[in-house]
Amino acid sequence: MEQRVVLDGVGIDRRTEAEIVAHVRESLSRCRGGRIVAPTVDLLRLARRDPDLRAQLADADLVVADSTPLLWASRLARAPLPERVAGLSLARSLAAALAADGRSLYLFGGAPAFFGRIEGSHRAARALVHAYPGLRIAGHASPREGFDRDPATRDAFHREIVEARPDVVYVGLGASTYAWLAERLRHDLPGAWLLGCGAAIDALAGDHVRVRERVRRRGREWAHRLVREPSQLADRYLCHDGPYALGLLLRAAVRRR
Image (cartoon, helix red, strand yellow):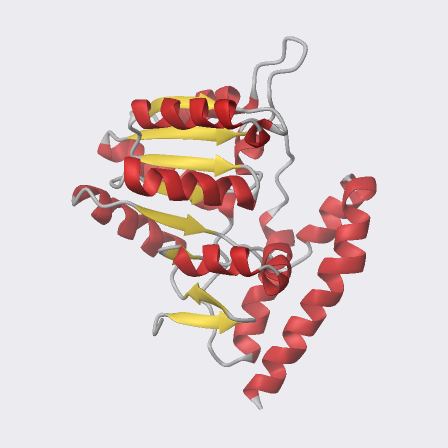
């Protein structure tokens, strides 16, 4: 914990993206796996009232900040995080490292197949192999919504991932699915790393427009997404995440004093 800054009870690692990738590569060389989560403001807000989610974050080997307001809060608390580590950026950096080492990746998530449209995980896998020759794709799957309510379907996906024996698994689904998979693979694939990467698989597949770096650095990515998807994000951003982010900054400032 000495390498972490605590924000609303959640310890976040004070590491750069390059340091995280180096740590994963070194661990894989020793056949040791681990868990990476990248909380956003929304995930931190949910964890404040959900003990299971807080336990999931506490159990991760690496917790990195995928939100600019978390950087602001760490600075107010006089324990600054070195940089934002976005899930999409980390997914690309890890893929590049895996390609250099001749290792394998499994993609679990993304938009399911729909009226002849190839599933998101398949399209993301093709894009990664094209960008990083040498990367081995151990497998991919884009389960439909609600799959986790069917034990037989859930177990079938679990078996498929275990049999593929990937070095790293990208989980682009909700926190509950990540927690379930992390717990199962902890025993069945102890040498593999899991990355909870949110919508990164969809972004890699080309389904999401990437916000410009300048906009992300200024913490305005939320506004860009709100304009693009107002019906889906207005309530979350304006009624929940926005007030929570302001409260987080205020609590950090009080802690600093």
